[in-house]
Length: 494
Image 1 (cartoon, one colour):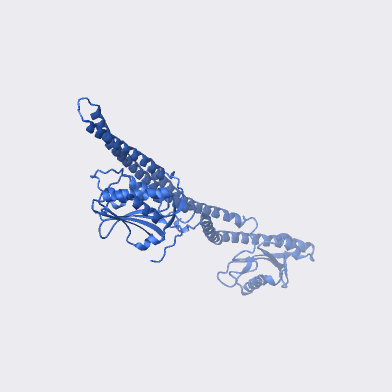
Image 2 (cartoon, one colour):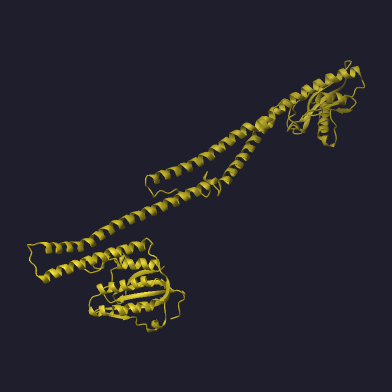
């Protein structure tokens, strides 16, 4: 079955049917020539003897009644002028009368009569005697198969010769079934065998698909159909393989999403538990009459409670903001703006806070960048949120006395924002997770951040069709890169 496969089952079945037809024809030909033809020859020889004897008796009676009777007409009435046997009346004087015209096309039959007369003259056979003379002349051509004498008043006037081919009768003998009916059983057997082979091959392939479907139903998404083939069933097998691969990918995504969900719930629980613990502790201290506290201490407790409440409020607000961004519900108010100018304005706002921490905040040393606008089509409020979160992250994690450098440049047809510092940077294991929710490069350090700032940055950048990356600087420190599509998407030569 595998060798008969083609891009279409139509050609597979057509090819198999053609092969079966050719095989049936060959077997039928062998059957006819080896079995049917010898039987047909026996029938022809029997018909020849019967016709010769009948014609001899009839001619004897007719010529005795009417010496001028038309012999050819009598012979034609007996043989009906058709069939494989030709009746010829040969008079003693040599005249010939046949049941049908013996034109140029019957020269071989005349040769059979000449051979018969030569045998008579040579004495190999006697008058009225016909026998198979072996592989001699005329062995495979027409020959005289029977002869019967014609006598009138007891005197021989001639003889009737029955002539037919010994190789293949020119017609099918009367009374013998047509060869087409003999072909039918052979064709039926071969066609049935070919159909069985085809059906068995198709059934095996369909069973293989059934086994594959059962394995998938039981949860084995590694199951594949080997060698599905190029035809329609093969295309179905390839589709099943692709469907199984898609299911495996979807299940992996669901499992990963479940892991992320559990991690998110754990992170949220942890982030909310810390301020709630502080609030509860300070509140219990304030309402406990057994604990004496000064007015300044009570004011400090209330201030701490307010700070922790604000921290919780900020966390919940950022969680909602991140959820809207991840769900694609954060509508963007797109306008054309210069991202470089937007970033320089943010630096002016953050400079006092960086000076308080003794951190040097500078614009990029590539002075030519200031004169090259980086026009983007974006939501200005969201981009301010991006740069504010990046600078706030640097403010929290860059140690005092450090340096932070910000610049915007054109890079490979995009506007790139880089925020670089000279801190310790990230380990290789941390780089893929810098923009994940609740990720902190130093989990042991308690900071005022929620751990959602960089995750919000990534979602805002993705909503604008951009990308966010974190890399380590060769000279030491980290670099956060934000790429956004340029409005003109043309990068000038530098």
